[in-house]
Image 1 (cartoon, rainbow, N blue to C red):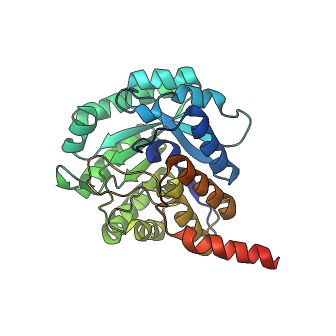
Image 2: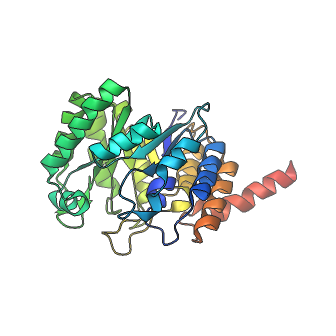
Length: 305
């Protein structure tokens, strides 16, 4: 298996937004630089939301303004609405991430909108982005399970995906928002969507709450998915899921894919250094599993060479 993998690290946004310790703009930039130095070519660097609601994301405009303009990394930011879109545009963001909802409960809790209202907001921004030359990626929250409404109807996700790809959206990311998916349902849904729309339009975003995050990555890979999200050091979580762990750790995902013969283009040793930095800056323990084995193994290999 030598297929290229398109990998996005969401740690500087999804990973940091719920951390008890709020990082400074300078610390966030250090983390982003370390991730980029490992060869990660797509990084979600922050969000344009109310700093009162999400204090950890205050200063995202300063983060964006300080990013290098001449490297080959795609730096994206999450936006919740048209105001966020305008702020992102003013800051110089070229790729915006939005959230669609496969459950009414999560839509109401997260943005105080119905599913239909959130979809219309996304369509309005998609129209503006088309004129402005801005790329849009949309995640479908609660693609598998909602903490308020229970199991998600796969037909709902298939319908959302079809409608928005028809509207010109280039990528839909299936988000297992609270880490409740299992490999069987992941394989079934991703296989359906790849067959219907092609692998280039579908990505996956998994959390590891029930210890099935990596198994879900593998199931999606078997279905043809080649776009994956991860978070450096497994940072992250969900405020609506008590006990929810973070996103699948970037280093875990990359190690598995590389050992399976996939081409991520990412330097694992440099990625582990970025993971060390993430732990140092946030004061958290590693959320992934690969590092405990991989760091000593790499050190031994370096000693031999």
